[in-house]
Amino acid sequence: MEIKPLLEEAEKMKEQVVEWRRHFHRHPELSFREVETARFVTRQLESFGNLQISHPTQTSVMARLIGDRPGKVLAIRADMDALPIQEENTFEYASGVPGVMHACGHDSHTAVLLAAAGILSARREQIRGEIRFLFQHAEEQAPGGAQEMVDAGVMEGVDWVIGAHLLSWIEYGKFGVAYGPMMASSDNFSITVRGVAGHAAYPHQSVDAVAVSAQIITNLQHIVARYTDPLDRLVVSVTQIHGGTTNNILPAEVKLGGTVRCFNPELRTAVKEQMERIIRGITEAHGAEYEFSFEYGYRPVINDPAVTKIVEDAIADLYGAESIQILKPFMGSEDFSAFQQKAPGTFFMVGAGNPAKGIVHPHHHPLFTVDEDAMDHSLKVLLRAAAAFMELSA
Ligand code: NI
Image 1: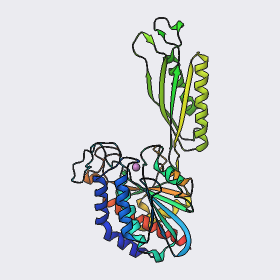
Image 2: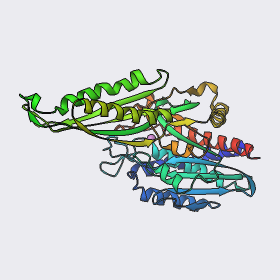
Image 3: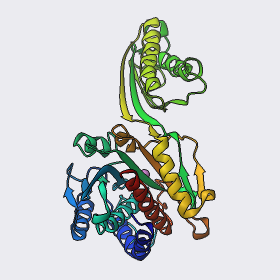
Image 4: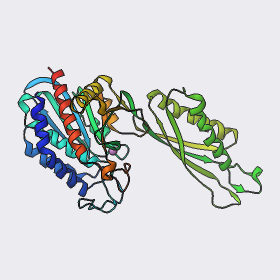
């Protein structure tokens, strides 16, 4: 597949991509409720022709571009959902929905993938195998839309999967790639410690759920500090404590909650068991009882080296090797990982921060925005990479 015409086409679509992004930005929808967004995406896809369009779930969209010649299947994913945040930007395309805002850039991802689908579908005769465009709902809210789409079969037959995220903490013109672990798994836990209520002046007549909880909180850090290989990355954070009503009563129970982040699937299972062992041991030692629940959330994003190399080469080819940052793993999470369970894939970052334009706010901030010029970068890298994967398809 020839690269030059693809890039020229992307150049011509710049304004259209901005227009689409602004439309999505003005009309944000929360996770699992992307009804109008999915409708808009579907209408645009239909106008391109050459695509087999379906709705794997209520608010997601899949478009298959199947070439005449046999070959492999590349899936490209964009997420579409917004966040429950009141936007504080004042530009004319700021959110028109009170309390809902595209504060993570998913509006731009959707616009870019639409453009990619438009450009590639016009060249169906050059396609070997298939390019599958996945417009995903609900990235922001566990259990996430990616797993639902996978369960609906969108990854059947897929050989590679790629996805991009515009990031305000990477400067415009730069890109972030990671080989292997990139983003952490994200699991949540809750613990109830049951003691025996009593008068605070007579602790010997009760079982103090507060004191027992304090032991548990302290001991949970042994999992990180003493049970885990120091070279493995792990966070166990207790983020909630609820218990008690007043100063002279020992409460009957205390509730704790928190999150576990790591990169190693075996460690993930081990942590759950180690937590329960600690909770069981401490409550038993002190005559208390417990309830423990551990909910597995998103898996870690672990990039396939060969697929990552293709994307890195595409970036280097277009913007020079100096534009690429090899990212250290970070503890945020992404349900792109669900697609990576089914095919080797890579998730990469497109710099969209620009201090000169005042684009400096972190993701999920009421003043968040992206440098819209970065969408052109993302689009061209996706097209360049798609062409490279087509070559492999031969
Ligand atoms: Ni995001």
